[in-house]
Image (tube, rainbow, N blue to C red):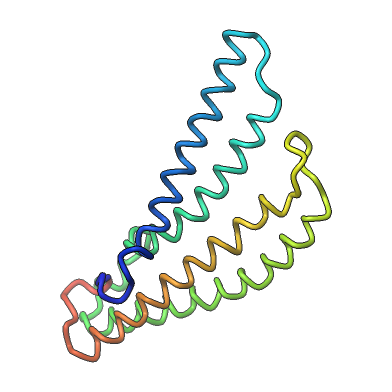
Length: 167
């Protein structure tokens, strides 16, 4: 996808968040390992914190993968189509996925708000901090797919469709 549709600072948000989350996961797991094998008493909260951070990493990382169009796809049918029809199929698929993600944002937000009534066992924080990763990640992915749809429409309109169907 062309970088001209999304400002540079915005394109780097998922990368920065993903890097920070990965570093925090590493630090948390390292603390747990050191606590377990050196002091024979791991902090009880490290496993739950690592799990929360990992869920956020997956949700934010999915948006980054959507930006780079590196999600796993089954494109055998699209590759058999002429390039223009393959691009149209890609637009339709991305529109359906974006619509599904909007629904996920909507219901995920209510699920996260409902989960806020319960505190986690080890950390003592509202469970909405865990469940909130889903609507946030889906919102980022929706934004990325809408930008991809716009880019695909422009390339289709200009006739700049490359051979091979999906790009």
